[in-house]
Image (cartoon, rainbow, N blue to C red):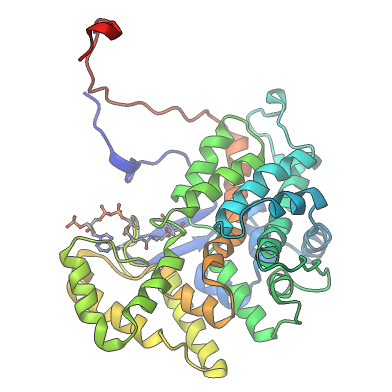
Length: 387
Ligand code: SDX
């Protein structure tokens, strides 16, 4: 009898060289480079290149990739018109998924099965290279456009004289972004760019394994990221801090939640059994930002939640994850709370596509098995005989 593995926990489903996690030691590397080093020294654009090609770009490679991204940020007016038809009260992740699913209709992206052979490098194929560029370059434009339009404002045209992170802040506010804010967001995008076989990457790869196009793959991954057990936790964690309100309320609130076996958002991880290395970096970013802009009013609440969690369940390997502190950083940057998960998607699109590039070199359709627990060979009971 096959052994059931709920949630495929610990089940390796493919080989990869894109990212590496050691959940016991709290290590995360992108293409072998520790995340702390990349957060300190790199940019999102450079990290996206590293993830896709498996190496840091030289000056010329970086200049071309950056130029291609900057000059493909605009979206067709029909995508804007499509989003204008969506309810303003809808969640921005749903708008993002709808727009991205439609995006591929405007560009040649469909895959001819004959073109995918063992060893195929889709990055070397113009059609797929430009799909990758358009997805990384346009997701921020789509998110910012929906944010503007749901408040009755025209979308702000992207600027190609700004970095990826700075341009996103520009499109949200139509104000030249503070360089510190742009750098803080740039590092947040680096921290969220890749994380091995998480639920959204896996979802995208299942779709990719059928040779669906990369726009459809990314739309599927966005769907998975939406859930509060995955990317949606960053928004929920800040909502929880707001609900707690004061440091004095933390202990009774958290103890009641733990007693009720409720899941505390921003805490716990399938792989990390220590504090998420990204949470440390995000905490450092938060404190840097707060020294300049003033402390977030709920930061001490967050720190007290972390202390109480550690006291009660730290020994079980349950600690803060990437979604625990990202919300107070984004909130202090003026990013609306329901855009936190779309910002996660804007970053993770590079990781999703890097795994797709790797998958197309040695693709195999995902089709797992199940353990059937139903009955067999039952009769068809006519309507008049049914109770
Ligand atoms: C992300 O996978 C990735 O890499 C994801 C991600 C990425 O970059 O792609 O890192 C991003 O999604 C981070 C996780 C964001 N989600 C949350 O913060 C939601 C809250 N977290 C939990 O729902 C939970 O920790 C999961 C879903 C993240 C992981 O849960 P598992 O591995 O399925 O573990 P489990 O639910 O089976 O819990 C194991 C034990 C249970 O205790 P027992 O019943 O065995 O006594 O740990 C406890 C749980 O009660 N537990 C928690 C908890 N998480 C686990 N208890 C309270 N609060 C929590 N958050």
